[in-house]
Length: 507
Image (tube, rainbow, N blue to C red; front, side, top):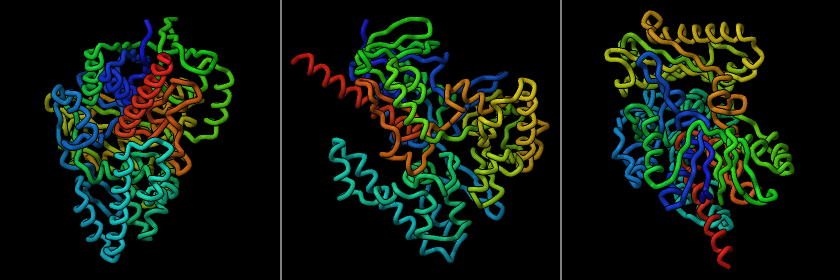
């Protein structure tokens, strides 16, 4: 049997692409190496506790959010139970402690009260951001062919061009030089994985608006409920989803266009198009069967910088974390206002001073834990290089040491934490590599530097006809919202390719 499109990987991008194609009456086959959908974003269970493996919060899930609207359009929202969030996070610095509540006006008010001498500069900064968002939305809604996009940007969205060439820090320093204000304003850098001095202003502003200025929601039962609902809808549409089905090869017609895929079990499935949600490095330098194409991509991709990895501790608690002082869903803790130092602490393994992110999913959804209990996720950035050469015994001891250190730090803000731990699991960069099938455990794909962001980012189109990419490694980037957009655009590319192929066959 030949499929219209095979989707490799049931991460967010692959799921969205598969759903959109199946809704367009295309016969698709979605193949996932793991036993469950979601990729990095799945959930797992331990002794009655349900843990989100990676997700802290997802923007665009509010009542008018882009993802929520998409779910409504496909009648998936009716199968899910949403918990609307009141705020995003409590953010702590040595001399500041405040809450982000999704309201831009409250954010502006906080900054003006905290930094009164910068009041006019704050107005100028937010005015520039508003102009950028207006032009960005106009650009996204234009739906122009690629050859017209640059002309459109020059005349109708000049802010996009200017900001796309700046780092987040360069953009903000055009309006204020106050280092503490800049540090607090850019606290969201951890959701992107680069300090503001290196981070693309373009992607920074997109992420900042999603989490700081627009309401969002949580999916009751965990985000795996959302992924399971999408799988059900794809199957309902007459297409197939198979788990424990790792793809080993993408077969082409003399390297020019896709022909089939071969799984680890030796099964071969024929197709007119392929969307790969596997990481771009494997997709283009390992899976594709053409040696010249693989060599060309190997040189190109070797020059791109991969994102940092992470160390995470999952705690099942005897009591709700709120009773220990966890007042909000997310707690962001910083020992310095210098984010370059915060980032470099990860490289030097300074677990005493690196920025700490603590998440309490059970505060939003008590069904994730046994009655009367709680859970926490503690996260820091870390490097694959710190773990890859350890012996099994060294690895085990080091993982325990780091987990204990992070719990000790968290307990300074949540007194009594260590006495109330019932379940503990830890994940290292090696875990990220093994379960996420991500080179060096990179959690955000390629970094979002200026040179690797926006139109500079790895294209979803490839050198092989009918092969397209989706997910964190390609445009626009990581995060559930980023991968959602990527999946939608990959589906559009595949649909366009299939339409052209059908037209050529008719001729």
